[in-house]
Length: 362
Image (cartoon, rainbow, N blue to C red; front, side):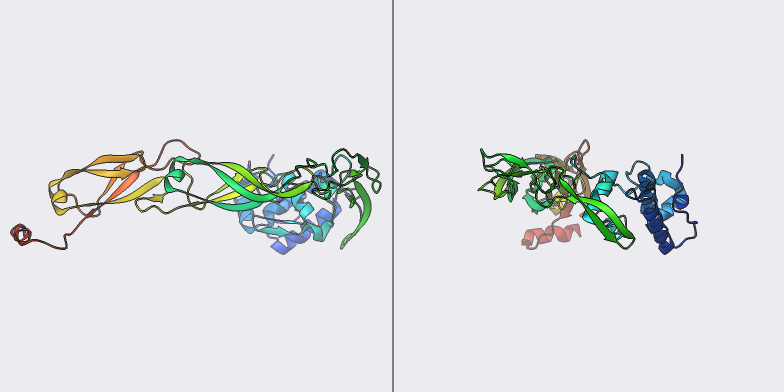
């Protein structure tokens, strides 16, 4: 059934962006899941509606095509799912499609109402930080793909305690502060009033357990800094500036959820070739006589030399296409072409006989 986001927020189509934002705040406060008469399902609908109407470009698309314009794009056509939204809520806000909103301003630290609570009622498993780095590869490696080993100094799981934070051979006990619950009850004061909340226990970080004797290597963090060797598979057809994402290869977390590693690819310049999408561009010089009379010449490609037939009367600037001699198509099948740009070379020094022949041709 088609969705009417204006109806969801109780605004009309002529409402200003400020009026839409005010309506969202009012509705969100009304249906907050942590309130006595709250409604989590309604709360999700309200947020979805605001993500579309709160963005002028997406609002235009909705006015023209309805919610079908965002079919299959995740939460409210933003590319986010509910877990993404909940994670953003824990971080204090999000920015999606031009709509920036600080949830902490409205709801404070109510992380667990978004489905982020752990089995013990804590704040859930904290994720390690993402890492961004660059990797330089050769031109032909980008064309055909390659496997590389990346050496990266990053946070990893402690190799002594294996991440459990305790000195090997010593017990792990129930946290005395939260009594194994992983969370403590608090009252969060916001601009909309006071809300009872749960937050991660500061002593066990939401795990409900503590080490009786902390690991001497990592001092009870479960983590250490070390040099990690990471195998990276570079896909055929990747181009300069594109990024590869390696899930779970970022910074380690004391609670077992690693961040991601983002690798920006830098392709070295090549003296003989250039890239234009999946096509490869090259220049080849020929003489006046070859251009006038025609010839067969060797042309370098990424696969090796091939023979190119130059027809008689070829003009400088002519481009010949060598099919399937370009780069592999990234995340597709087949290859691009090589476009050979012909340059007719003008001789700079002529012998007396050559000058005489050119005069006769003239």
